Image (cartoon, rainbow, N blue to C red; front, side, top):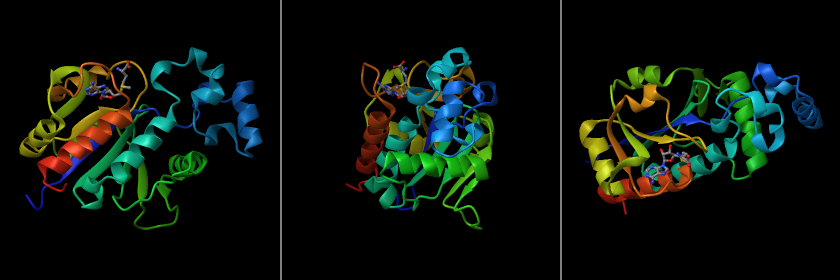
Length: 229
Ligand SMILES: C[S@@+](CC[C@H](N)C(=O)[O-])C[C@H]1O[C@@H](n2cnc3c(N)ncnc32)[C@H](O)[C@@H]1O
């Protein structure tokens, strides 16, 4: 099992720049100006842009970059990642895929994380002039990410799935060669396009949990399954 790696995809993650349809809203313009930025260059954040987001399509899944922040801290700081056994992707709610070098250090401070993500989504990579960036953002649908990974199906983490232990979920992922997919959004359900890809829908607890708790339990399940800890 020495070469075994686990792939985790954070899907439909609530991370994006302010979309054009609300870029002229006074709340958005005011907040961007305060930071010396143009409205289209800043992250959409429901705690700042609540009034502007009222008419936004799919609004319940949008404007929560803090979910991605905490979840990436959990995953990238895990022994699973430190031991080189984890590959992490973020697929965003507006169809970007963020490729993450496992050695990337995500800022612990939230404001710094926001600055980094704005740079990433505006320029496409971080550091901006590197040939081998630590983070890359590419416009890509969830299905195209699966094609790129050479897989057709996934292990979907869902509170509505069959109750399974995290170790068991990890074993299925490794044996089938299928990535583990966790929703990176605050409310609601996966898009049907993603649900259709599930060979297994697995629940780790009979009630809904926050994304970062699920990510952390899955990582520790994989650590036990791979006998890292
Ligand atoms: C905050 S939940 C999504 C919103 C949730 N459906 C709700 O309306 O409260 C984020 C993600 O964590 C995962 N998740 C949450 N609870 C879970 C559970 N009990 N078992 C497995 N995965 C879970 C799912 O992948 C889900 O998409």
